[in-house]
Amino acid sequence: MEFILPFQLPPYPFRISYTDKILLIGSCFSEEIGNKMSGLKFNILQNPNGILYDPLSISEALTSYIDNKPIIDNDLFELNGLWHSWKHHSVFSGLKKGEVLSKLNQSQSAANRFLANANLLIITLGTSYQYHLKQNDQPVANCHKAPSSFFRKILLAIDEITFALLEVLDKIKIFNPHVKIIFTISPVKHVKDGLIENNRSKSRLIEAAHTVIKNKENCFYFPSYELVTDVLRDYRFYKSDLVHPNEIAINFVFEKFCDSLLDDANRKTLEKIQNIMSAVNHRPFLKESDAHQKFIQAQLLNIQKIEKEYPFIDLSVEKKYFSD
Image 1 (cartoon, helix red, strand yellow):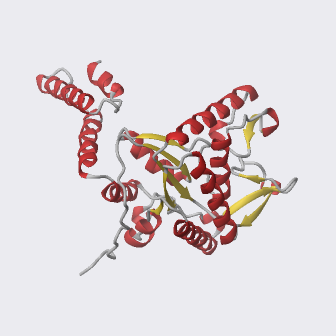
Image 2 (tube, rainbow, N blue to C red):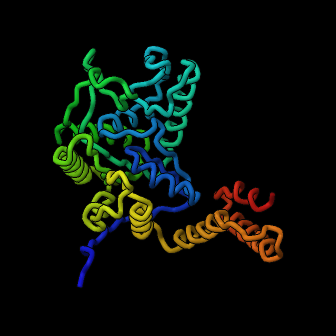
Image 3 (tube, one colour):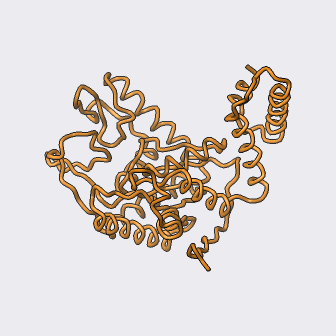
């Protein structure tokens, strides 16, 4: 008897390596996957604008990394005592305008350099809804808790989404001809839009992503959305808000990602690093015991072996943890 629908992951004509540079951009689910990759010492850059949800904001952000035009005073606004950018997440907001500008420009310049040499770009689309300022019809990537009366809400058309993604991919192709691109759809439910509206929104993203992949080389699809909603398909795989996938679901998706995109050699490397991370989280019963001291020395030896075999992997934090 089958309790889970059989699901065949798509084949990929390439594999991810620990030597690759990987840029992740998009919704909060990309943060979950990015945190997994960062914790396992992949060379990543994650959401240089902060979390972005809609495909037009993501496309505009990618264009800004390519152009690398300075962000200036007029790009910021003040609300509730803080300075913000409509194109960035509130993680960049702050009390001092100059400091906010500095952080924004530093992040954009870092993204410019990283994208120029990236091997892989992972784009996670979250919603087809976008908000525009009523005052001047400017689209915003984040509302920064401004009153709802400031905005009008728009459901983007499939053609509009597709055109924006194709356009930015053309720019990326010129900027970095070798980068491969994986599209994925966030399984996070945007229930504030309504369940029916959320499904309409996700369906538009899925259709647009597949149209883009069909028409562009080096573009692929990873089924994060389908793995959660169609394979796991149970609220026990969501957090208590019933909206965000929980740790079990995130681990499941990440394991499928690794199964599909890591070769045997890099999978073994990942497992070695996982063992180090598990050892860091180990809480000894008695730190002064001979057994724990032997455990520490064994971990330092394992780190030394990994550093020798993979000098590009930074385990300095973990080495310091076991040395102190």
